[in-house]
Image (cartoon, rainbow, N blue to C red; front, side, top):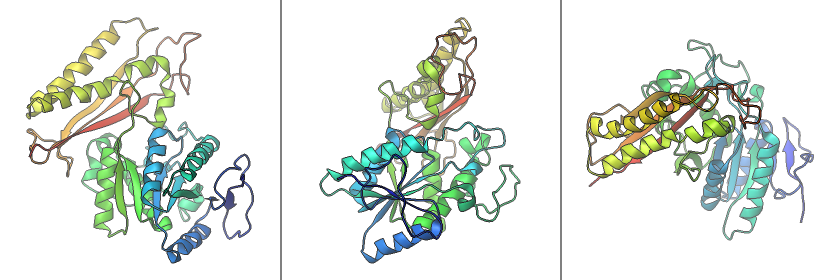
Length: 361
């Protein structure tokens, strides 16, 4: 049976159809504001239903949908938030060009919800929260400057390491918006992907330190067949940079292999990683500008799994976190028929990835 998703905005109590989305479950509502979403959540509480929240910035891919499936397997109701949060972008970062694809995102969620409807014992997508900036920051939209004004949640020193070292406002924005989403939705469980390993550790610390009543669940990193971790930013790569972007996963896998062979020192583990990215960069630099895709290594890290502090030797009772970030530079000498990706190959693309090194008891 075909039916329409409802949209509730502000104090509006009457529903109206979402243009183009007529196959959601009858109880699926797209919320734009907080009060009606809270009222709906209260009704679910009265019925002893459980909520799993999947926070996203849209531009959904299989990594996101795997988290939706995970949430549906563990809860009666799935909430998905779609909001590109400006406070986690630095002043000179790519907020203005970040892909905003609400129409295709809703279609993807519609497809997943149909799938869930046919799965025995599965929860369903019952709420989509797609607010605007005024809803999320009702008093003052905080500034992206390091010393900017606004209401913030900061988790230090974790937020100053790795990604935070070069993106000083990033995790402040993540922690702030997630605190807001947790307060608004009061989920029983929240779902994040392992690809953003530092984010998962910070969110867990935040939930613990602020006594937030939700369980943090982590889904495995989803990858392309060649190892590239799925990311909303991959749409910028184009064919040339896409082929070279696998260097990050290859770098981390080489380090993982060294550890699994028994090496535990930083020089041995990260030495194996360095050999991969240096060789790849050397080969790219030998190519003509019309063929190559250059990149910069921002960091490759071997860190403690709890504190993310760099370590010299892996404690085999704890394991470690291997992580890295590279920046794919704009393509040089673009060719007329070349597939350049969104942004016409001019947008630098930051790629991150990680591998957890398991303990050896």
